[in-house]
Length: 178
Image (cartoon, rainbow, N blue to C red; front, side):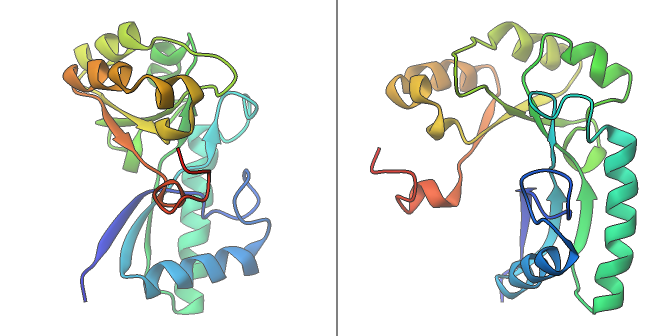
């Protein structure tokens, strides 16, 4: 069986719009393992409508506690701390202050979510993060109306080293045919 790493998963109970409670989260984690996923990066939302919540230290603590519950339940899943971070003009300071998390808490990749209500050209932020050796991964850009209509913007960001993370449901048409 092939094994996979899920870099964007809302698997921690009660933190954001993922599982509401531990039983739901345990079911999700069992399903992940059944699909061949051995490691998952827990990515609760940070900033945006979750500003002031899910700070780095809180997410790390939640991951540690959740790891214990998974072990008790006999679910062989490694969970690493991370976040789905809403773009914010304070990003560099918030990273420096250890308020927001990078993927797997390793300081190399930032999973960045754009607001769906408006388009923001993040090229300056991509460059600033690259200067600090942090690569951007845009979460679900196919669900952003401007980026869906103008993929050349993503291509421009990709030329700067940015990657994209596509939601599986999008590939299956769950968010419409586009």
